[in-house]
Amino acid sequence: MVKVSGPAMGTEASGTIGKELVFSSWKGRAYVRRRATPTDPHSPKQLSFRTMFSYLAKIYPTVELYFADQWEILAHESNVTRANAFLKYNLERWAQFKPISWYYPATEEGTPGDAPTVTPTGGQRHARLLIHYDTPESTELTYIFRQLDSEPTPGTDTLVAIFQYIGEDNNFHDSPLAAGQWHYIVRGATGDGVWCPPSDDAVATVT
Image 1 (cartoon, helix red, strand yellow):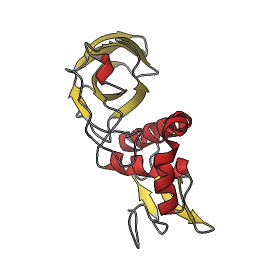
Image 2 (cartoon, rainbow, N blue to C red):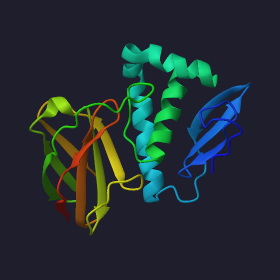
Image 3 (cartoon, rainbow, N blue to C red):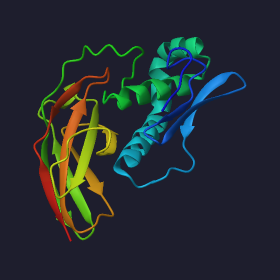
Image 4 (spheres, rainbow, N blue to C red):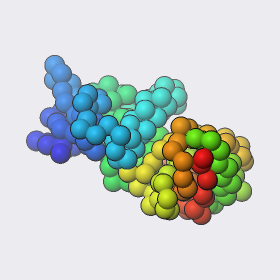
């Protein structure tokens, strides 16, 4: 549990989110890092938070190019770097099952696009999804949720991948997987933090 003596984005936040991410401070500056020794590193929730953390760290250089001035505001208020401000803000949003926002604060005014059509293909220890949007211009990020043997409920414990959606059709390759019926739900989101409708359940038979 995260303990705070001020706002959660303040300089005295400490503790963990999702038993995976640690908020602390060093020389008066707050920071976030991965928890070094999780009890069960393969639990769905911890895998989900690692997926989110890794994607946020990967995408931040692009965010820095276009939106550095917005994250500088939060960084100054919280006495952290712009990168950590972006990470902490969006990790806190994710803990509430809210999508990533490029902007601070999230405006949540974007027009959501359509639900994607997902065509699954299973193989030996892998699955592949062909993802199609009729209105791709309304979707900036795609989130993929997965569960074995039953339809997943999109949430913070079923996320397996995030990517920036470009064009009408994208492929997602999931490997390695145990044999069985793997169910996928794909959901887009706008860049200012608005969910789009989810896809239908897509099932891939993995051998």
